[in-house]
Length: 300
Length: 279
Image (cartoon, rainbow over all chains, first blue to last red):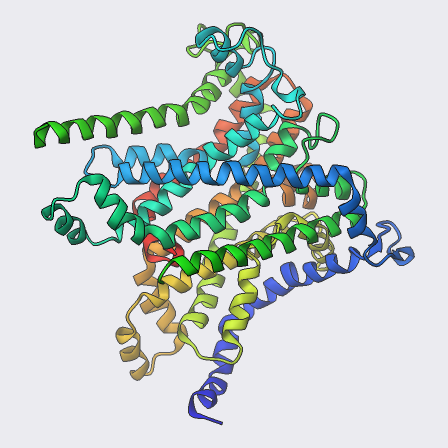
């Protein structure tokens, strides 16, 4: 046994002391539940009488993959991430760059842009539902009477495609402030003398951004990209509240609204667990893939 | 173009973009505020006015007098404060072990904690419910607290590990040689140097606990133990068209969170820069 290994073992009691509260909580409320729901995903689970549950192997999984409602939900979820993550990151980073100059009222801008981030999903979802309501909604009014781009009111929430307009806009609107704050933190650690040196060499502001800020900001962007992708794939509360999960005709589901409905409305726990495992596996694979891909481009 | 003219133009563009963005961000909030001040008869007025013709506080008195709003508010405050305090303590301890101690399986355990950042929390709700019941926490605010602390551990431990690793070891090594325990080092040396990072943890955890909806929705049956997000969602479900009252309640629920954020925001950016979050 080498020295460092012996020291590691001697430290074990101290380490355990520091780890114990966290490990206990994590085992009881995350690891345990994960294993439990893995187990019930292989059963036709009877909630009222678990002992009578029937083992059906991968039955719930194949049922999900063969279900057109599930496939539609997968597409909806992917579209949600693909649209909102880039939009959020581009707008958020632009705001961070603007805020990283010598300007007045920085604290004001910071608080204003962060306001949507700190507001509960329940509140902003109801707010967007109200603004996009078909009859007397603010958005229809602005589009029809103020901007004149539509002739008659759009029934946003009655259409399986248009219902995503408020849901996507809400996600972008709510996430910009978070992206901006993280990007701003990334920009602020870039040493000022790099910019000054470039300026002396005659670099304009675009060049300074392109050749100094952007390369040094890449790890931050990678982080934002991975975390927002996970966050949006896991998002569902706005959809649940705005479309009641799936309205109209089960065409607007996200994977997790479907899971929510299976579990809490139809009490089909086995199916609900299988759906959430499919999503978790997908998120895990895509995160690892993204991290690999981004690592290759970045010298950490 | 001269140098000053160019700078002036750049300045003009900067402020225009930033203020334009603020207008877009603020519009829904403005609309929420004026809707909460409208009498019920004008909630579906056409055209919807951005500046109310008639202002009333009736929605506030009605919504706040209804049900047990004051109690929901206190429930939320209790749950969020205790969850935030416990999260700071437990994740600091974890982060300290990962940042400063050597023990077998360290990186593996750390990675297991990171998995907690990837799973959809909603998939854990049913088994969490069973665990809470088994622990005798059924329908108790402590079932919320334990789950909120746990759901925050992964992220906050990851952040604090980054913060702690950024602190030079000289100080604590001197303290350890003087016979201080690791526990004392954490509390007396590391945490006081991590204020900005702790501000970030506090803001994130408090926000999460104050706004969390799905778990509280499942875990709490007793009306008197509801938290604000549940109360607001259920209220909207029961009073479909009384948007004025829904938003009055929402605005009152928003105030503490704005206070916490404004109080800690000065340290916020700096704190994020000190965590591992920048990449």
